[in-house]
Amino acid sequence: MDDTLAAGNDLLGELRRHRKRVADERDRALLDAATDVLLTLISKLRLGAFLGTLVRDGKPRLLLRFRLRPGSPLALLGDHVVVKVYGDRPRGEGPLLQLWHRHGVPTPRLVYDEEGDCSWLALEHLSLAPVVAPSPTVRAVLTHQVSGWAEVLHRPAPALVPLLRPLGAVMVPRWDAAVAELVSCGVAVPAFWRARAVAAYRGESAARPLHGDLGLPNLGRDPAGRLIVYDASALAGPPAFDAARWCARLACAELDPRELMASWAAIEPLGSDVDALLATECVLEAGSRIIEAGQGDAAAPGGDELGVLLDAAISLLS
Image (cartoon, rainbow, N blue to C red; front, top):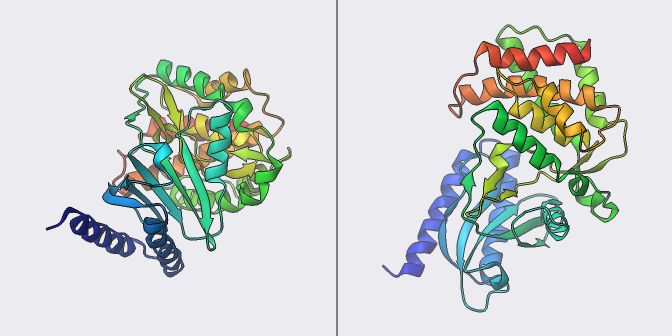
């Protein structure tokens, strides 16, 4: 079979399989819109052989790798690229990553644009090794490195505000789902915590650009050993959120998230909402770890691990 035809058949098969993984009807409509845009981009960007999908999940967006054909406007990114297409409102991920890259934060080079009511970005394909943090010492070192980017990550960018999703609109439903999981497992979550969580996500300080999903899964290490950050959720909210999310995610039985937050705060001033945000993110992270374990994505968290997160939340919210 001709290689081009084979690659085309592989792509169509992958798109069909992706659609089957999306259960919600509204999300399927978004994925259909993203698929229509992708088919337009194949010609417009001179995308060649389909080289595979990078993520297989039930989210309504595409993340695919392609070789480029001669004359592609993406040639500045290399011989092959990662194309990400969202099926809904234009998002800020592309312009935000590009802005950070210009100011020295290590992100992939990219090109972005809009097509219809959708947004897409094409990123250079980098050979990245997963970032692992097997010990509290390594986690503390990583926290120092990542917080060193904070001044650029959270620099005001008024022109991007219309493309950034409000933090509360994104995070409150996730917090509610995590709490429901904790309650189903017998964890007592005081009712007043939700009001504190909603207030924390709305923030007392002026909204700034946020990565919105800082954690080890969205970092890679290039062959030279340099940390690369990618996959920004592109949210708008208090700067302390990125710090809180990172510190809650890197907490473990041997490392209290408050220790990590103190390290971050020594580099970036975090404002008065820091304690409430860290507590809120500790609760979300505890519930999320149980959800992920139930989906087969991770080992079931131990009691000590959840205890560190919940003890920190209780202390900060009391």
